Amino acid sequence: MWALATCRASIYRGTSADPDYGDPVPNNSAPLYTNVLAAIEEKRATFWDHASQTPRVVRSVLGTVPSTTDIKTGDRIRDGKTGALYVVLNVTRPQQAGREPDTQLDLKRVGDDGG
Image (cartoon, rainbow, N blue to C red):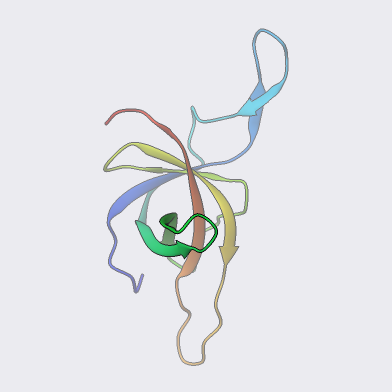
C-alpha cells in the first residue's frame, strides 16, 4: 500500500433476508475480509452559491486500499478505528507504468457502531 493507512478495515458483501418481512438487507454481521489496511478521510470544499449569496460546504469521503484488495461497488467497509460503516459508491483502479497504484474508493457513511 502506497497511501498512509489510517485504520484496519473489514469488508462486507452480500445481503440476507429480513427476519420479519423477508426483504433483502445488507449482511453486516460476518465480514468477507478483515484487517485490510485502508486510508479513509473526509474531504471538504467550499463553493460560493451565487443564487443565495452564501458559501456552501461540500463534504465527500474518500478511501484507499491496496491494489490487490477484492472490493466492488456496493460493498460495505467498516473503519476498525472509529467503527464507522461506509458503502462503496465507486471503485477506481488507476493504471500507471512501473508500479500498481492503490485502489481508490468513493464512500458514503451509512452507519456507526459507536466505537
